[in-house]
Image (cartoon, rainbow, N blue to C red; front, side, top):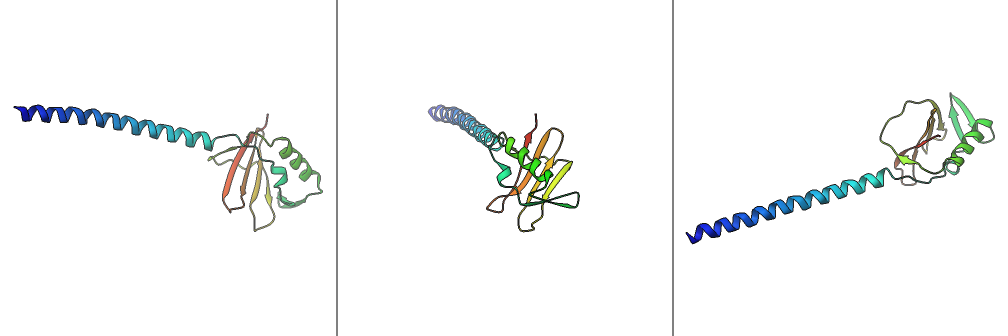
Length: 134
């Protein structure tokens, strides 16, 4: 009889511990996912006008840094250097400008409501960022 009481006590104690452990793990998982979400979709300040290559290709035409189109894009990127955020979506190319040099990657996609930039950083890692145009 005493043996059954001890078993019931152990069962009830471990049952409570298991629920508490599952709850703690769930809270830890929720917190981790929230932090990753906040980090990934944070707003970033990047001055892409300083990262622009000296030549871009637009509609099979090479645009030099002295052309009006290049200067307009550079001013646009200088004006909108805040509120860039990472994005996983793929965007339909609208008005695209790509890097001429094959050793680096820099692509600008300008739509009616957003600027999307794809580029490789110093560590050769690809990034895609978007910024809404008001």
